[in-house]
Amino acid sequence: MASQNHASGPLRALYEGLKAGNIDRRTFVHRASLLGVSAASAVFLANTAGVAAQDASPAATAAAGSAERPAAGTENQERGAGGELKLIQWQAPTLLSPHVATGVKDFLASVLVLEPLMHYLPDATMIPNLVTEVPSVENGSLSEDLTEVTLKLLPDVVWSDGEPFTAEDVVFTIDWVKNPENASVNINTFETIESAEAVDEHTVKVTFAESNPLWFDPFTGTSTGFVYPRHVLEGGPEAHEAFLSSPVGTGPYVVESFTPNDQATYVINENYREPNKPFFSRVQLKGGGDAPAAARSVLQTGEYHFAWNLQVEPNVLSDMEAEEAPGALVPYPGVSIERINFNFSDPWTEVDGQRSHFGTPHPFLTDDAVREAIATAIDREQIANEFYGQGQQPATNILYGDPETESENTTREFDPEKAAQLLDEAGWTLNGDVRSKDGVELSAVYATSVNSVRQKTQAVVKSNLEAIGIKVQLEQIDAGIYFDGSAGNEQNINHFYWDMCMYQGVPNSPRPLSFFETWYAGPDGQNVAQAANEWNGQNNQRWQNEEYDAVFEQAQTETDPDAFADLFIQMNDLVINNHVIVPLVVVGSARGVSKALRVENIALAPFSYDYWNIANWNLAEGAELS
Image (cartoon, rainbow, N blue to C red):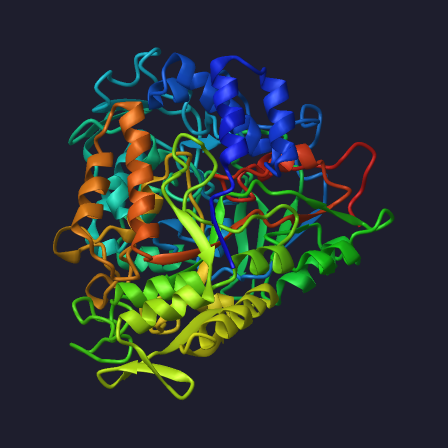
């Protein structure tokens, strides 16, 4: 049995010492690394401490430094001289239109073609991409009350089909995402925008309905910030249908061929704005299979050059990696949470032609005692240590990466006896091996994607729960189906036609309000995934909590930096202490990278998807691709 607070105590003490000036930046980064914190995350934390000492507002964060994206060795290179780059992604992409994508696999495959206005660096600093500067109060592009921002676009940028990229495209994108008929997953992030005006060809003025501390969210990063071409998509639904597999973008590549749930091939965008980039003439992205096979194809055989998210048991990975091997493991900054989600609606009763109907309560998971018992019965330490390793810690919260927003008000415990007692006290009596109450049996279907680590996690959870009288049926679904957001796919996470499901939650920024939208129901449940919104509501658990919704709405307009950070803690606490989810592991799964590639230019970042900097990927000095 174990009961403990989250493992951030030593890190928080270091952070407070840095803020107080008791230790310097270099010492902080070094000591944080000894606690298992990745270098990128440690640098980010050091930056937040530095900002907090001056002005922790988003404007200050945006204006900090004059950082540039990593581009070592690109000065004298020739476009396309590097040959074919091969990526393997064991979750195959389904579509290439990120504003309607529900899985990381689809965002990843879109990044080579479509771009945001601004990027997050590995240390979470914002940098310009399709704009000339990051807006700030200091440079006059952001109003002091955070209600207006002026976006100054790069001149002479063209779409891959040769049409000019203009302010009208940015305005069109905002309107497109906000249009409910397009069923964008980012609609609530953009709803804060009251109006957008093309002041001239390269200037956009955006006005928010209220002060918006996250004014940058709709324009930054590789989950919400993508710009769509007006001249292509103003053709309506038919135009977007074609765009799903053959998008027109401003990025370094264009799609040569795309087979959903299998593979994509990209060739150079000859209209890309930097004449000596990209370095690789073609990119082959192969999807499917499993994480161990992907790891092997980079680390051992060298058949591929980069493997995403190697969610593989640590002993298996260590056996693959050798000094003479063609590939190596590269750490990834860990802020994602592998979690179990509870369905608050009934997935087994059909109402108005759909299951998991919002307003039809789950027969037993709406009982707080049942959810708490499940959370208490699961051995998170075993899951983290045996199936993840490499410093990946058991999770207590849903938000990590910044001590300013990491809650100290939560605990995790593994206590099967207490879990059984909770069920006893709630009237769930044991009949044979399974508990029941008022004719309802504690029997749950628990689903996740096909992956060896997840299947082993499922086995532990099943054993833990059956030991306290909860019957568990396991279901495994191919990742291409499980994370496919198609409205007609009843096996995806947005339909959530099971009692419990498991996947990773991935924050998309250092202040990830859109990430917390996952548990926001909204007025009349408008953010709940249902048939009426083509299952694109962000809240697929159908949990509704008035207090949570009020805190989320307050965070949308809170401008005081300390109060803003506290609201994230409050949202975290409501989710965790109401046992809406069970956070299992803080995940920082390594990537497999060919030793021929220049690792610093890959620039893995916790708030940007892996290929965000692929325009600058090239070879290590003297190396060649096999």
